[in-house]
Length: 196
Image 1 (cartoon, rainbow, N blue to C red):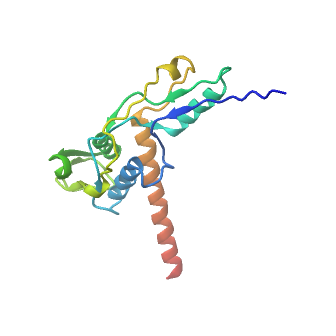
Image 2: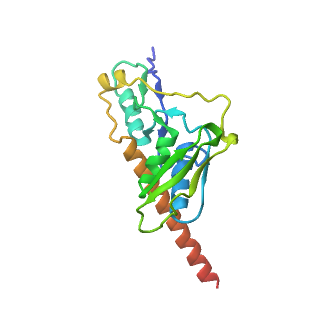
Image 3: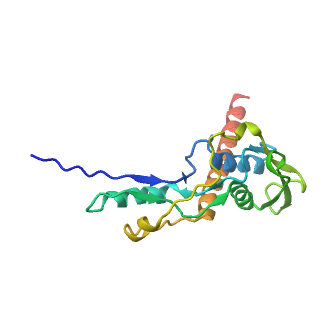
């Protein structure tokens, strides 16, 4: 008997979430923002701030994969947001989520991010404080400056539409990292009190 196989490819652009490993730039940023917000760190060291990426939220992309597998005919699809964002703008959005406005000065390896205002009632950061630094060790020799996906086919043929925009993705990741660190601090304090 013949066995037909259903074979297709989903080309997924950067799909991020609160479960992303800390070595990935988005999670490194949101974890760093949470640590600075809670007074656990002073700065975040990053690489190429002018890299452009097409970032989306993982649950949306998994829905896209599911839709690909529901089609009668197997075809290849691109799952992406179809929009690009600079790394520095992801940084800006992440800090803004906690009421911290930053601005960047300098270029390339000398670019730095400084606090312009802080409306966060839980943790005030000094205006003018440097909280973003560029470190050459985080530049990747094979890195491309621009990544963007063409979502025309996945939106028209699959009817795929992401529920989260970039701001929604950033909010989920920042709040998750803040809550995780708060839990860790409470557990550490509880352990210390228990051991005293």
